[in-house]
Image 1 (cartoon, one colour):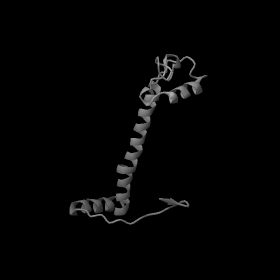
Image 2 (tube, one colour):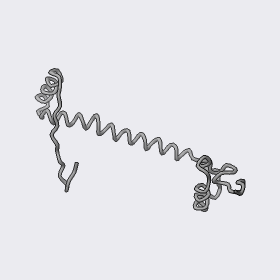
Image 3 (cartoon, helix red, strand yellow):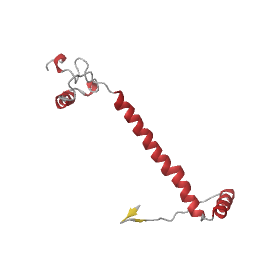
Image 4 (tube, one colour):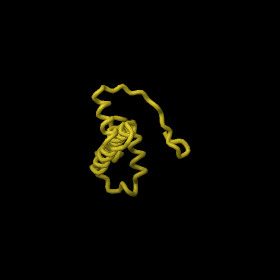
Length: 113
């Protein structure tokens, strides 16, 4: 957590096997850094970067969905407000069918209540 530009560090207790601790200490000696530094670096690599990569993959999927959207409406750029309102006026089960007869993109095919 960052508070006024200062990174706050919290202490935790972790139980490791003898083999895990030995490997961490050996790596610590070889690299000339503390065991805590190696653990923090492992958290950064495995958790924080993985989370960022998950977010990037999610954004890419969203971009693909947006890029694949086709409304079949010739006037969407100039009449977007009207089409959006028509979409909001549709029952929930009809939303997402913009531009198809009887849906948000074409109010003419709807029957009056």
